[in-house]
Image (cartoon, rainbow, N blue to C red; front, side):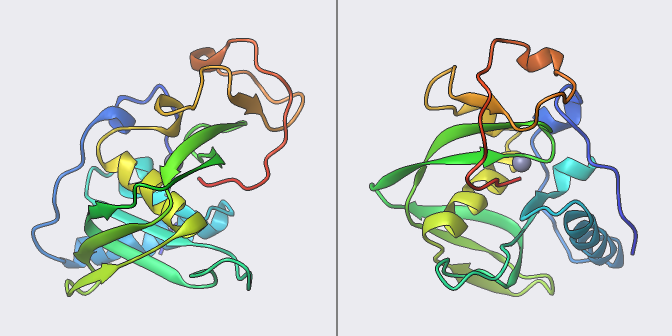
Length: 186
Ligand code: ZN
């Protein structure tokens, strides 16, 4: 296993759609292992293959154990994930992204979704995440379509820098108020 480099906004690969995985080959297994290691090494709670520059439809989510957050403390790997249902009820919340370092922003997401996909061994399964887990999955699955959370801000000014003194990013070099992250979803 190896920690891969995470690509950041400005890299065109983040904006390209990812391809469906046709077969769980040794290369795909290897990529999944590397992604797990990369996510953990960066204290991430989610990662899409596109973020390490591999345009395959693979996402993973791992929330730190928290008894108030359903589905936390478990690693989820989904190959070819598809959201087949989304609740009409939505929730606004704060997200960040390892590919948009230094910022967090407010995004509205469905409160509950149903995901269909394959596990790391290629077996079909469904997941019904809700709340924060559903939010992180929606964020990661967006990466498959080349969509970033900064495309979905509830309003253009609803984005904040996380730490003072961090280098500004040209793509986001607008006036952003100082803010803090309640919870950050990479
Ligand atoms: Zn992200």
